Amino acid sequence: MNKGQRWRLFWAHAALLGFIALMLVPLLMVVSISLRAGNFATGGILPSAETFSWEHWRLVLGLPVLQPDGTWAAATVPVLRWFWNSIKVAAVSAFLILMLSATCAYAFARMRFRGRDGLLGGLLILQMFPMVLALIAIYSILEGLGRWVPALGLDTHPGLILAYLGGIATHIWMIKGYFDSLPVALEESAAMDGASPWQIFLRIMLPTSLPIFAVVFILAFIGLLGEYPLASVVLQRTDQWTLAVGANSFLYEQNYRWGDFAATAVLAGLPITLLFLACQKLLVSGLTAGGVKE
Image (cartoon, rainbow, N blue to C red; front, side, top):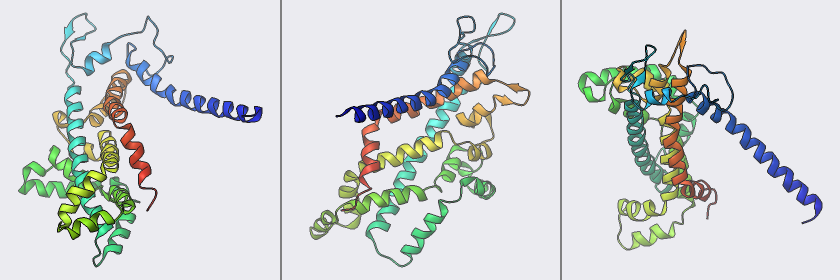
């Protein structure tokens, strides 16, 4: 490596480190606000010894909170319940989205039927429109459905999960691209041995497609964990709120509780970070394997 190449490598690493530092500043600011007394969004990147406080985290974790008169009172905001609601709704929705997307993608990738190309084009067009445009329609559907099946109506987690299942177009295309990259010889050999299409899907396609399934599940889980517009419309009672809806309640006009909001935001980011670290290899292999077709 000559001198010019070493300098280019040095400046490339310096630019990457600068970019990483720039990305970490907002995160450090949020953590700092959550560890600072009061509900102010100003101050340095790190809290000082005079302003350091656990009061916001005590509220988030449901521990007794110190009142202005010096007494201790139980936390009145069920943040941990909102956190559990978010995890439950996001995990169940991501699993069901994965199951629906996988079966649909297998049909589009391996089967030939009338209207196949039109349906694929329709799915591609649907990706261009955000779910917010369908809020009124979803509200009306869940309201009517709740009259016949109360468990799937408004202000219920199953109803919210049912609404989330409509956003599978992107995941169908992603899994279909991965299926297209797999050799057809494996399925043809299984079919010659008498395996049905369902058996081929369960015993061949599913085990060989774990990387892309992990990608779809994680992306769906991350997207739904912090989803706010649809959840705020469907969920009405406080004990049914998800963490995104509950955190927004800290930002009332003339009463912005930035410290409580920051602690809740950090709590919401923990499962995403842990999930990404645990499945990092699957994510990389799943995102790259479908890019080459054999």
